[in-house]
Image 1: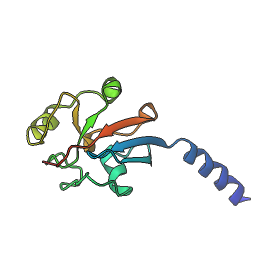
Image 2: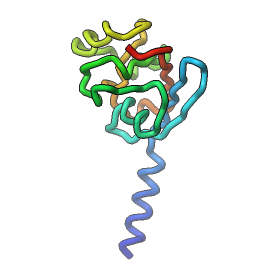
Image 3: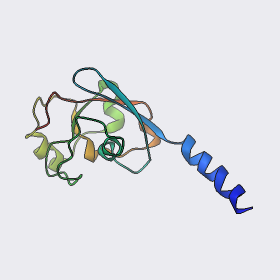
Image 4: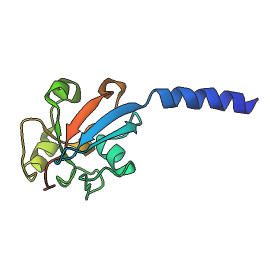
Length: 122
């Protein structure tokens, strides 16, 4: 009977995963399932998305997880805080939609989020 309780709960958790699309500079797409609470960077690393180096492991101490958030998602993702702004100064190809993926937490509201990767990580 314990199995009956575990399987439905697992099925519910699986259904609530958030889909994130990472688009490499060359155009290759990687659609991954991300868990709520993890960051966009953690989801990329867990799913071996190329182009997210994440040298500092998510401590907001480098710019090697730099992404360009699709403009349609900027309101939901929000603006960077001051520490992230400082680190973005080290990112190559910085744009208005630049964010560090270690600073974007996955929520249900981000289901379908699209981020593009720069040619090189700074």
